[in-house]
Length: 346
Ligand SMILES: *Cc1c(COP(=O)(O)O)cnc(C)c1O
Image 1 (spheres, protein in one colour):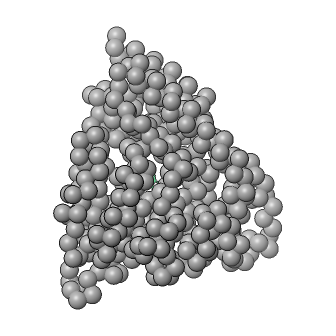
Image 2 (cartoon, rainbow, N blue to C red; image 1 turned 180 degrees about the vertical axis):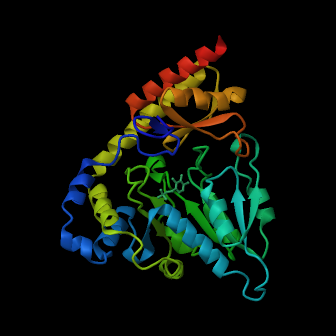
Image 3 (cartoon, rainbow, N blue to C red; image 1 turned 60 degrees about the vertical axis):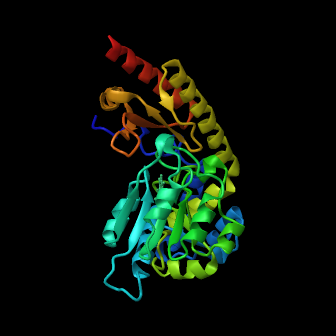
């Protein structure tokens, strides 16, 4: 079987290993032929999502996955490049390690990506980030909790950044906020109109295949950011799925509890084998396996477990990222890891 096909346990994209709520399938099945034939209306779903996030509807825009929102942020940063110096390339600042997509989108809009390496143990390089800022800085990328480390940003950091760099949009990618149970959405976005929060329903709600995310910012900012998005960017299946997923809060709560229990099992495994790991506020754990990391990815794939090699990411030498979803899946994953480690030790 080719990698990623069929029955492999996919632990390499931080997807929901349980699938979406069954209520989502019911909602999709109730879509009529007439619904399919018309352009979607977003009023009801936007109001429901806004309520769930505890903001007014004009503070949010739904996106075709958060990725589309990140694309819009890059477009915005490039479009609002130095008015007085049109020839100057916009600069986007990226504290590393981070989510790969930022680099891809910065490159599409021909922005200069300014990378800031991590401090030891992934302490946030605040001074180095501020030192990297210039008058051409248009976007600063923050991820909270971060991917691939699972570490939350220090309290208040995003706000400090937004105040210090008013010429830039400060994006806080909260793809894993359902797991950390912490969000910047609230009064901070009113105090700092250059703050934008990204959310997705791919991870906690298990809608990765349907592509639904959201951007949240002050309405003034949202209006200009929203202009970077096509008018009918989320299809009717995404709309109905999101409504059903938000109505089934108990499913999300159940899944978050599964990930919490799974992470505890992974930590215990790490302590048993004397492996360095970082306590994660997301649905995955970064573990340092050292030189055996790349071979382990292959060994695990042969056993039907797909895990992500993050060795090449700054600060992540020898590290694998393991999605920690359904507890039963995690138990099987750990058993397979034990098996692989024992086989290599012989
Ligand atoms: C998974 C992920 C996304 C992408 O979310 P989609 O809604 O699937 O596009 C964005 N940011 C981070 C940090 C992620 O890990």
